Length: 117
Image 1 (tube, one colour):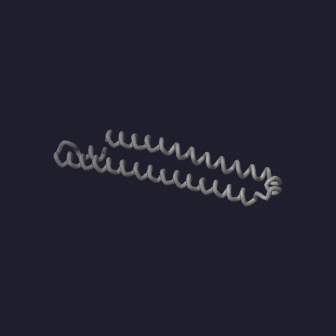
Image 2 (cartoon, rainbow, N blue to C red; image 1 turned 30 degrees about the vertical axis):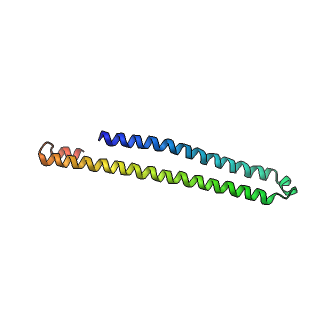
């Protein structure tokens, strides 16, 4: 059980460290897109005077595309984290139950000990 707990903790820690960087990138992309939108709206007259509507639209579309990509990376990594944790937990539980069942058959554990596990 301790090996399972150790593997689970190590996997969670290392994967969460990787995710922290991805989440920071997504937050930065959100802030950049929000700032650009607000700036374009605040300076509407200037954008209109220099006929830069298409430029601003393309620039904002590119930022939203990057934001979508970052969001997909974060969501995918969350799914990978959950699947990995489930695999580690299920494998550890299965191995522990098989070892306990073997011990019950050999008479070194009682059925109550098996239920405890």
